[in-house]
Image (cartoon, rainbow, N blue to C red; front, side, top):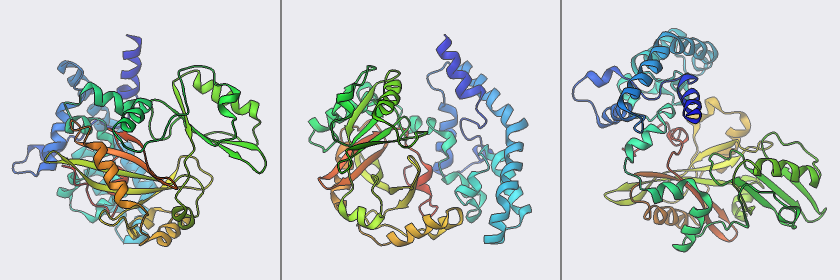
Length: 399
């Protein structure tokens, strides 16, 4: 009972945006398929709860949105971001304010998406062609309503996923140690090998750590969020031991980049690829791909770069320059037209992996290109939709 109340408090009462899009276009005839899918997401949200509870959640969520949060977010977003768009594109602050209000009040879409998706480039009737992150995870649940227990388990438990993919002949990362809420020993951590530690259940690098071993100095360096520099082995073991006592952790080899990627990206940290595959007439097909290059001096921030799907060529994305710093702009320019090594293998592995999850409409895959070939890191049901729609600011073709 306490757990359910905490869940409701965190996901509903404290939430400052609606859980789905409520658009006036739902009332109009002859709307396109995306409008119908947004409407279906709205109606099928919170599917595990009784319908009366869905009504109460919707009543609370949209009442607080229309009476307070929408107005507040429109004003703050307009105040903080309208000047940049006016200087770069010449769109008047008054026109921006009207569009922000329409986005928030006519469609219950948080106004910051006007700038993130550059919606000024589209007419109002095209706004619902995009998928918005505040609809997650309900959008993915609506698109894949009949996920079996096996698929749900493998997608949410990384160790079992890795073992199953290995059994099926796909190249994954072996877990050196599977720590089930226990004490991590000194021998497990400090064995003259660089390691990557991650929660067995988790996403977006939350709770992850990289333990780098430098053979020249025989020293270990721990990298992660809110981790200081110059830590001793005793301090490192204490930090890892504390987090591992609270949840199930995996310890894996720290992957290295393929030499061509290291040279071109000028980055020692692992550069990952995020691919989206979708079932098309029962067969998986790649529909979007990104290269995520780590930002220096940041453990979990990356610069996403679009990938041309046929040849694996990195794209120049001048549309994004408006909201990127000069270093990120320079990186994207320098990598433009670079052909990723082993690209056919990357696509083949992702599509083959999806063949074993035919009850899931679309899956986000994390992969890495290493000196030993392509490695499948993990799959995600509730993958992030925003980065993939920033490639040319084109809506995802997954409907």
